[in-house]
View 1 (tube, rainbow, N blue to C red):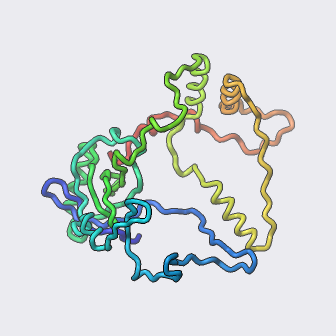
View 2 (view 1 turned 180 degrees about the vertical axis):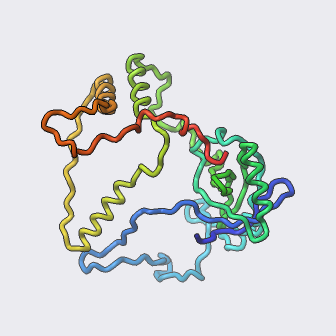
View 3 (view 1 turned 135 degrees about the vertical axis):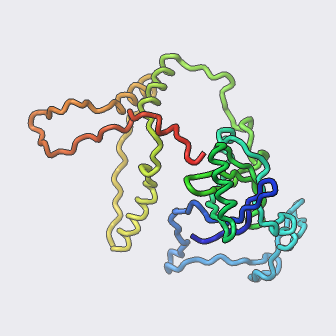
Length: 292
């Protein structure tokens, strides 16, 4: 893994030297823009409209447009001084319960490993957080950007999640057409709850796949080998308008397979058998909290 940041976690007067690594990676398939006429990739240039020429990086600074056509300019050093980048500190302000933070606040996850001289302090903080079940709320500056962060434990690792500031979360009052007083049909509600129960299962992230990315990769391989890309037609979906009928049809579609082992006449015993379990598993595993 590539180290993206070095610094220290601080809580009170305790400093824990750490190195930071990205915990996630972007697996989107990158495609270039191509000129159809000659199959040449297009380049983007930094061109000044006033001077009518390409601009080098050394000639570029940053500016804020405070009114149309009027800017205040900042050099890189000025912005770094404002962010406190030189402190290289993840300063824990408070310890809270993870359940108190709505998922809407979370941005990006980073793994933190102990620095060359920080193993003892790292282990101390990790064990203290495990035994108290708390997570830390901290402030940090990464790449000239100040962020709030949540410090928590996953297995044997201290993890930092950057989180939005409260004023960066839009109010639901701006969402159109939300119901004032939600009223539902009791029978439909019971059927909806039954459907949720049928579809409930422990969270197993490895079973979810990016179907679109896999389809694009397969299409790329077909084109590279000179094959024609063929896509199977989408299966016609039933257009059920009635809500009760839709709930009933959904429940029918997720009914467990009968466990009667006797085969129907004329069917081979070599045919694959339905998978056991899945929807009806105990929810005890799902309620386990990793590292907290």
